[in-house]
Image (cartoon, rainbow, N blue to C red):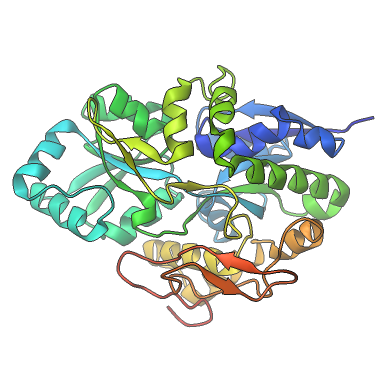
Length: 383
């Protein structure tokens, strides 16, 4: 009998590894039936996992860290099994703000985080209200790191971002695709920056389970991780983008025109309605460069940002976060498939070009890893 696993997801392009694992048969190859549940917002998805209505979930990478730090209310511990996607966020502004930014300076292009920050400050010197999908999200951490504390963040579910900026509730947003492109399509926003311009290797979504579940269900955990890993590998092949867009466009998946989904999968974005498609390098990554490996240094960086925001002890926060970032389970269940790095932590931001690192077999090339301001984050130091 094929066991069934209930999996929660939000309608975003970066849920693709879970959707593709089911729809392209990678789960079936592992004798696993994935039953997918689409949630309306991140709180709902968190609650589904807490209550055991789903056994695993597509989750914002800071959400398990927040739980480990005691932020956002009580509930069972949550662990990160693997990273589902890197980057994938876009920053957009209202047409009025885009006009004011252009009036304040030259054309910024799409990728200069320093110049874009200066243009935003010049256009709105008294501050700015930005929409993010959840208080504990990479979007919130990247914006705080990039723009500093003078911005005000408002929580808006991703599918509602276009309506919120169109209604004037917010004047800018940081959101995962396809919802930035959807706002462009509706004429509600213009895109000014990819999240990758702030941190080129930001772990955006993770595969999360309740603490202890993976040990209690070791065989199911291995089957699930292998199926999702193969789906990410399939998604990384450019020739599969058209079919992936069609699969994700289904009403019970994202329910968005496949042409709009295709922009994120191919890295070809339309930044304003009526404009031309532009190339956005490293916009979204599902597999290459050990993208799925849960580096504990990633958890430490997220924890450090949260500790500063909420006045927590930096060292204790980093230790708590790294403990639930289960690189050990990744090594246990994917040793026969993936090329594993020799270490489970690294300097973040210290790789300006792709770089070979020590691995368990063959060679492993990590992708470019840099912060917009040149920061090098050492998880072993008091940052």
